Length: 279
Image 1 (cartoon, rainbow, N blue to C red):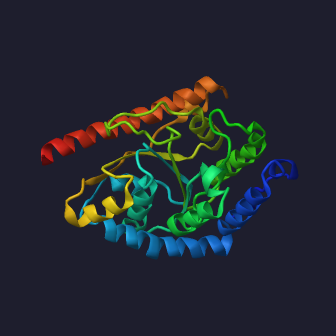
Image 2 (cartoon, rainbow, N blue to C red; image 1 turned 180 degrees about the vertical axis):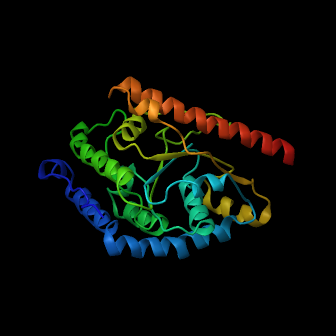
């Protein structure tokens, strides 16, 4: 296994004392034996309770596309983002319905998960520390100097996406949740996903997710009292070679993001057809 990248003193010094503590602990939990232990917990406990809460509603399509990729290389899953629980149900599907060895990483905004004990607790009980690495600057952030640390997080994410068999990285190109009531609407993709793919050149599979609520009690009760069907569509591995040979430029990053969302949109169209047949 490659040596994990660590931030330089200048990069980590821009964080507050608590942020540095939260990062160092979470970073350690995503390495070696600790990562294997938390992945085991994620496999049996995390995936278990999510399955119990969703098994009557879950519908999965295209899982053979995930099985077809090279599992000795990292896999980047790019999905639309409508619920807090999108990647949790995707991870449950992978842990319960595939047998190859895997470990999950979900890059997140650091403002909540790395800035207070509650955020760290949520990362532990919901993600088993897999909400890593953190990015602290998004949009018009009032503390732009933290971009220095985010440069490290991008390098670390590129490493996870380019080295290490079994690495599965979940990413939302839209950058934030889409709150539109139309499940087939999408936000404009952020250029960061394009830069990540340009630098790391990982295997990429698009994912469309629909039917999840942001209300946890309602979501759990819906499993037994008639909630919306949860649909997960895995697309075929994408050929991004035409983008990889282009120049490193924001325009290229945006083109990659637009291409990814178009493929997620195609899965959304397939979901419309499935729902129309079942209605």
